[in-house]
Image 1 (cartoon, rainbow, N blue to C red):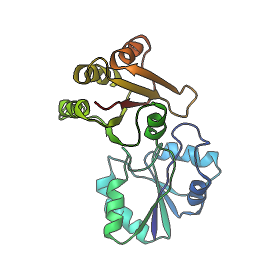
Image 2: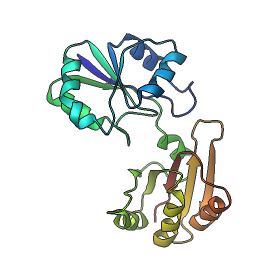
Image 3: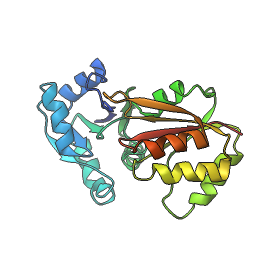
Image 4: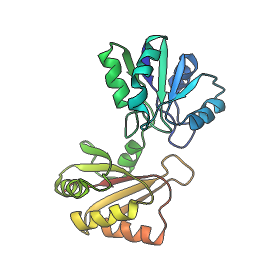
Length: 221
């Protein structure tokens, strides 16, 4: 019995490893954040496997049942809509529970949006802090103060409808001259990276409506 964490493409369907395809073909069952999206991927690669739903809204309720399912078969694969499971996506609870029940867990290497965005930012990346998505309300100001004071490069995810607010708060807390890089639609047709000071990048997106999923990289103090 084994749980495989299988990274899936974050945009370009070619960004999946041969090993990931083999695991998806050979596993007994696939747990998916969104079964519709996963079935599209499986159909593209002619993979026919049973798929069931596992996402942030049901993971607590079905956790025990999922453990029993894994214990009853040879292997189960966990995938999310895009990227590596448990990185700002469901997966952590299941991994922890598998470890408690002596179920082998194996995470395949593969797509994760923040890595290419960090590398192409041109900012120091030998050490960095990844913080996922910012809090919407409680703890948000505290997080920005920590980013402003940090000597490390900070990497975060942001949605298009919150990007402007985040950029404005970066200007407010980090100052107008802090260097940042904003990448969107990593690996997709309209992939783009905008680099500059907080004010310059904010002005860019005032003139160009934010669309797609974003990775924001902030230089250290």
